[in-house]
Image 1 (cartoon, rainbow, N blue to C red):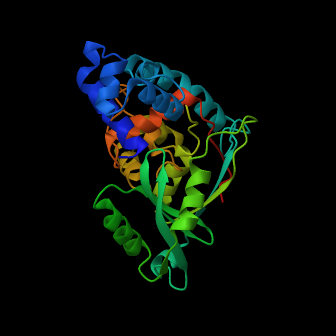
Image 2 (image 1 turned 90 degrees about the horizontal axis):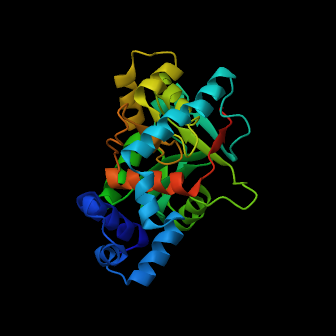
Length: 285
């Protein structure tokens, strides 16, 4: 069991027993660790204590963040920027595949792929010379499913397994901010419809520590009545975490569904909200 799985078990335990206000000993037992080691592990992983982490995910706290989070998001849109100015320091260059490239299915293209450990479990990552083209979380049988999905997206590409390279990428993608706030840049190369691309670019404007809703995203792309279609586009996100679909919640403040397990969504949000993570400046291609 890796660190994420232990944390996920604790989140599940808190879901069932939060009204009982379990103490440190009970939480440590749920994780299968001594109280001392559990407290150190959790505080290192999340940046705060288990009690404070849970508070970050309460309904009232999330509603507060949802209200306040609109300020940065809306300011970026009102200013006509491709992202929230220079407020955030992870630069993601998002390049879309052309219709011809999608039609030929990656003919003549090499896609390196592999598995890597992340703070949220094992991830399946794939990359072309033009950037990351896939990121999903791989649990159990999901490993073979992830490769099959990649193959279906780029059926004529040459697939080359390279776990070492994906481990390097994972360290870049999931890196904690440096003391000066700087973080490395990333390139992403994805295939999607024009509508999906508009939604994904809007998602990239949502900073870590902020939340948005399907309705707000629909308004951001100028189609306020298309919240349902926006939800479908969010669900089709090909590069989890990088395009932060986990920051989309329901209008009520409920965290809602997540393709890679709602518990993982809560873990990612808690990690970001509690640690004050920095977020992308977008250089849209």
